[in-house]
Image (cartoon, rainbow, N blue to C red; front, side, top):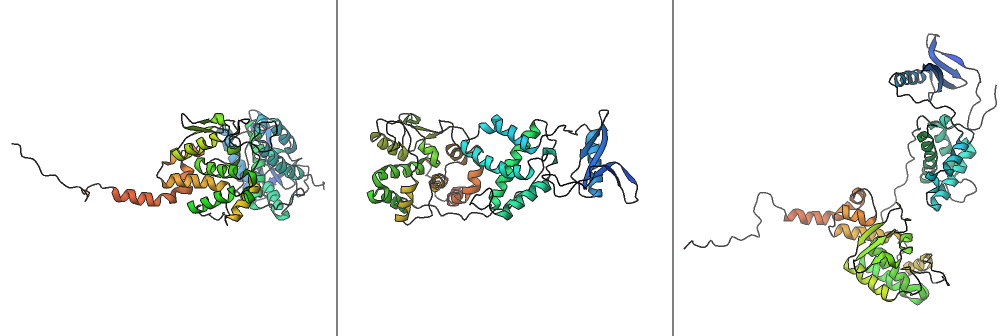
Length: 400
């Protein structure tokens, strides 16, 4: 009997024993140590033992045969000196794959890694099976809270824990430290209720509430400018904070979003200004703060040139006053895309303006239903074989 190792649920017998089939005969090339099956075969003149994922003799025999087939077809990957998970996480965090990510992303992944290190840190990456990942994930959901956090671990959060682990395992696979990634199906998550589209009247009420000095304070006009800017550009909340006047080409009527490289996908995008956006930006430019390069400068910047940090507090007050407590900053991006779809703008153009890299696939899936009225009107105007009823033949003139 041996003690349980970290990351294991049962002790292992350190001695390899042959596996017997139903006739009590040894299965060639199949061994077992404790509850774990191993395949033994010769590759490139060397004898190799490889841990199997199987939990029964029948499964182990099938897996062994598949390995031998892969070996014969030269598809078999054998990993030597696989690192422990704690070592793999350390190497991953020191790599550019991790360090080039945004600070908020790195902080979140670091939190997820702590939970994995506590449970599987001493387990080698090639011994991290689907069953072990699922066991830890289910444990996180059952505990509801991890690492002293007050936030519950929902199915969605648990999926993010698994995704962080898979980033490390993929890092190992790409560097020859892991032969194959375990496949784990995500937990089902609740579908968020669809929010209704903000009406023009509701939008006007929200802007009026923002400008009210008792609600928006001395920065109420700036908040109203900001909300209108979001609705006319589809900018994400923090993308808009960071935009500078040098990104606004009023002569060329081009707005560059994400020129600082900090957009969600790290890429800048160019938005051709519609008339309303151009008018709004020209008006804002006439009122700009001469000592700031930002379109939305911080009111408390002192002698520094800083963008506004957040409008949340004033925005929350304004939406309560307008009786729109369900509205968030992202709803203005939704409004922007929806207006474009209903105006009949093609999905590829909308995707480029919104910063999507899929050529409009997501726009079609999420917002396609809004274009139904446009499609119906278009269909009514089409004719393939019958002459349109609104055509009148002019009398032919005589040749003489």
